[in-house]
Image 1 (cartoon, rainbow, N blue to C red):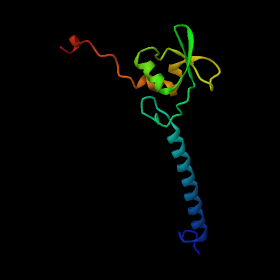
Image 2 (cartoon, rainbow, N blue to C red):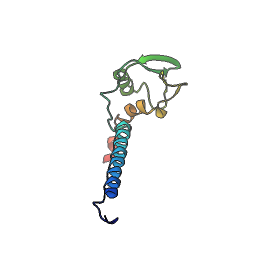
Image 3 (cartoon, helix red, strand yellow):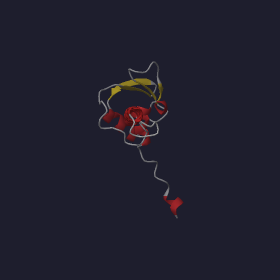
Image 4 (cartoon, one colour):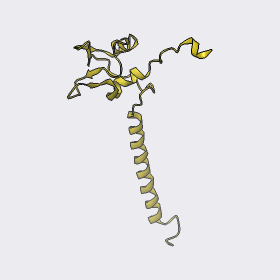
Length: 121
């Protein structure tokens, strides 16, 4: 057979291997994309583990553990913000919420302060 013929066995094997490698690459990319969290994008908030794992420094004292529902209330009450120190079991040290994406998204989901009505006149 001619080497330039698409139906030669070598070309068919090469095509098959290329398709298999492409499928593996697409599967890996899809897995990676599905695990990516973007603050404020509502990434699987409901599917997160609601166990009590989060601690905060509030008024100079360690408070917690808090579950996600309690954290949302703390954010709404403005008890915690992006500069609040937090800790959870996977962390070595306390850090600001702004450096912890899993918690930062709850801060980012809150609407901004209502502007003064005079600014719209």
